[in-house]
Image (cartoon, rainbow, N blue to C red; front, side, top):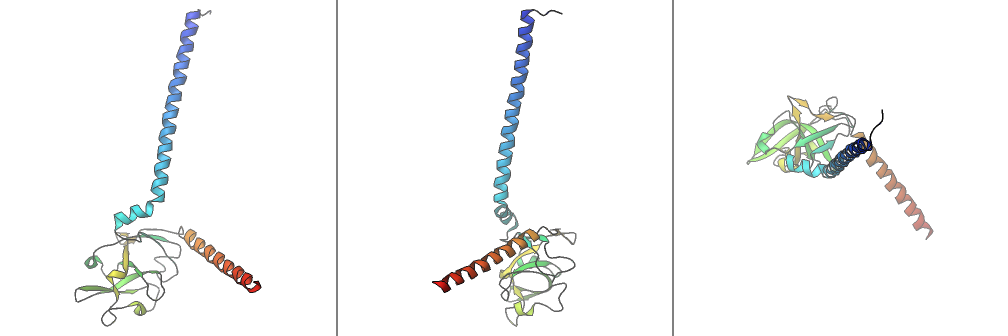
Length: 196
């Protein structure tokens, strides 16, 4: 078969048009992929702020440390929380509260709710502990954990805790490595000071 010059030009034009349209589609798709990647990065960097605004607590995500809530919660589990009104926290709920003894957050179960002078206090206990958290209790007659120290209630669906197992170990290991670095740095500084 012999093609005429006109047929060759038309087929070449068709090929160029097809190539150009595919190139435009690729550019559009890479543009949208770039925009999507930027949005994912922005959301990732602001995830805590986004969760804070939705959950009403400044601790929307917490990492379980220790074994006081074993076997329900294990070290390294990540839990999610929200901040309800004081009258919505009930016996059996698991709360996250600020410890005045250990200067950190504690995740324990509410075993009793007390209302004294319209103020709510929550008696708490770790599922794996023998006794309540008496050293943490304040208020009249050491009533319990006051609502202003409660950071949130751990989210559960049909009495099943929503958690991500083991992922919190990344945070635990990071904190451990930072503490080692700080100790090492302090030792080096002390040695330098000795020789000055």
